[in-house]
Image 1 (cartoon, rainbow, N blue to C red):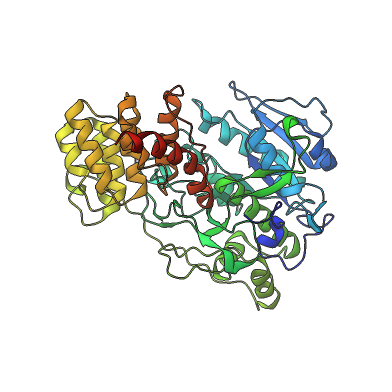
Image 2: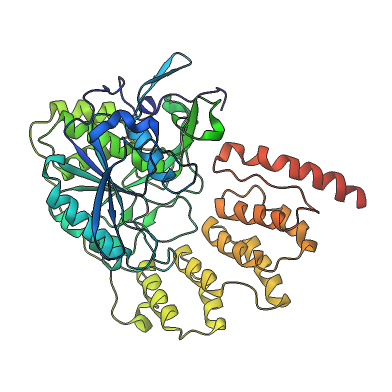
Length: 488
């Protein structure tokens, strides 16, 4: 980017004016499924932020965290803190512009249920039910879930109703609460959220409100989920999301940065809270439809999900005559017999079937290799990830050949992950070719390969920013050219 500080997130979301610190989100409760650590930057929320914890024995406790000044310098709770700061931080003036949380007047309930550990689904249901029972005054309208996939294998495809988070949040969805979730950060995975959730993807806005500078994110996951429904619904900025500097080691800086579709989803949750507070008669379905129908689509992009445009949405809601009719007749793709489903013309049915066969452990390695030639990248990802790693040197060379001819970034990521296992330093010539791949997981593997041999190779700095990929790889290429081209 060509400026030190990006534009404020509210501008980048399409607000025509900055959210009011005292009214944006007022009277709206947001449940954030995450952990959080105390910090003085959220103390202004006072009694409007609570932390609800579900323990292993299913007991539930609640505490005020704005009155706890014992800030701890560790990563646990950092993710939740960044979400709250994106939603509610106090105004800060930087380079002539005001940065402010999107819904600073909302009420925030951070639900820590011990995510990504055994029994999380039962604990999540316990926590959500407890909040809905005891928090009538909080007026919960939104649940923000940035890790909805839980412990599921993110490549294996199944109907979303099998997911523990989906089961746990069903009662909230039935009550009309809007669940907003991240759609995923990379095409490495197949799993995407159910149609009942507002799924948020991302795009590259280069930190600017000017929409002419926006481009799609090259590794953005989109397509049909395990039910056969297209995801995501909407896109929001996913890089360089400014929040006040909160890290002890960054005290000399004015801002920190949130990112990924976790950050994008948090911003959309803020927008939803802002709209609910402005238009209290809105239902979750009406709000969701308005956001999607009045966003801005990219031209010549296979992903039809639009970029969020708050001003357009508000303009429409102010002139709308009445409630919009929201049809809900989408069928769910499912299969009964995987041995028949594997031959379906529908790629989702084939992927569901292959997942069932893989889990049943009935396929030989040769049969898995056959599925790496399927026309669907969804199916190919399942097959390659199940192969795990080359079994011998001959197969390793075949991995490299397949990688070279693979056009889909997520599938390339799984080939690279397999090649990373037991990778010898003599393969440096092969690895160099992938330092600028558009897929994050491919570049991650290159970086990890270099890190295995720090005494031999320079390191490749990881980046999610597509505009930084070439610059980050340049020192590596300069070293390689200087050393190996001389030898030849």
